[in-house]
Amino acid sequence: MTNPNYSAKQRDDARRLSLQLLDKIRNGAALDDVVEMLAWHDQPIPKSYVRHILMGAMRQSGQLARMLNRHLSKPFDKASSDIQDIFLLASFDILNTTAPKPSVAHAWVETSKTIGNLKRAANLLNAVLRKVVAETPEELPNPIHNLPFWLRKRLIADWGQPRMEKIAAMLLEVPPTDLRLMKGQENPAKDAHVVTDQFIRLADASIDVRDLKGFDEGGFIVQNLAAGLPVDLGLALHPTAKTAIDLCAAPGGKTIQLLDHGLEVTAVDYNTRRLTKLEQNLTRLGLDARTIRADVLQLQQNTDESYDVVLLDAPCTATGTIRRHPDLLIQKHESQLEELVEIQKKMLDRACQLLAPGGILIYAVCSLFKMEGEDQAKSFLERHEDFEFVAPTLPVWLGDKEAIETHEGVRILPDHLLEHGGMDGFFMGFFKRKKR
Image 1 (tube, helix red, strand yellow):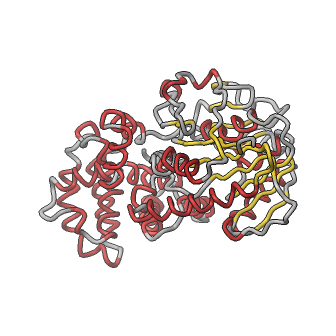
Image 2 (cartoon, one colour):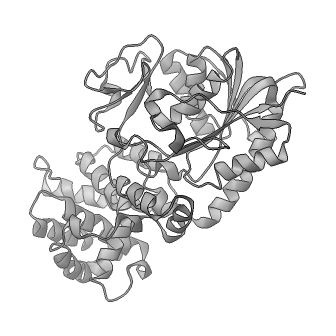
Image 3 (cartoon, helix red, strand yellow):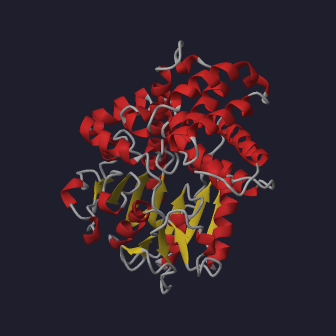
């Protein structure tokens, strides 16, 4: 990617900003927040270039590290984080540029000479990047190495080495953008792939959806195909449902789905900023829901208050969304998995108490781990013998039913619908209290 319309200083500023943003991500900043920072950056720099190298360097961090180890005398992971960051960003840029590679390498070295802690590494960076110039993307190690070892080990145990190598190769790609059309609204992108009457997949993932006809009028929301399934499948199991509570609701995609189906909805989330974003989304769409800021585990309930549908889109490792959130590859740690599994367990136990007789409890996680999906659902049924799993009717467009339906729920892996660009990874379970 080149930037012919920007000055050398503006391109240098872009490299500096990419380093700052990657440092923020390493220190726990959410990718969505970082992307927003980039959008609001008021200096004239090539923002698309910053996003390109930032996302790319994270997606290929494992491959790039192994490649760099061939040219370093000490292991890459022993270097300080700021040194790692400039090596990753510069290497990705060199390997994917359409400009002369030596000039791109030189530019990164010159940038390093003007940044405090990186000045000392300028000579090393120069020597190594000269060798990176001779590399090609095709010579990089197996993409499965982009998954941290603990993540790779667990996912291979769940899905096998061949399947995970296939999925890991997918994670290098820019994910498609899916739109869910609100009922009665027209398709705003005529060249899009029409999946259903309400779901389309844009032909160009780089399109700014805010520029599409109908955005300001609330004609659609951005929602991955997989993320839309829990509500659509769950409501089909309870066609007479009138009320729903969406736990962990922000930023509101599933709340909006429930409202679009005509239900009276209560949306709960603990994060004030995210709940505000949900309320803004409802306003844009002309929808209304009761919103409550609360911790699900501390949620107060009136003795006579229950819901036909209880949706728990639980906190999880989000490993099914790595393609659109590659920050997870450098932020998530194995210790977080055990913590999240325990939180999910407690939330499920609380969620089922909110369910009206004959209602449907929907449990959803955008995780690839069976611990957070199939195993969590099985554990719930063992703890609550008065509940049973209800199998939904799967839509024809999903294809191979045998590949996605389990005894505990519905499992979507990223390589599903691969011919159309794949999907986010998801697990969803549907539970109903047994009749006495």
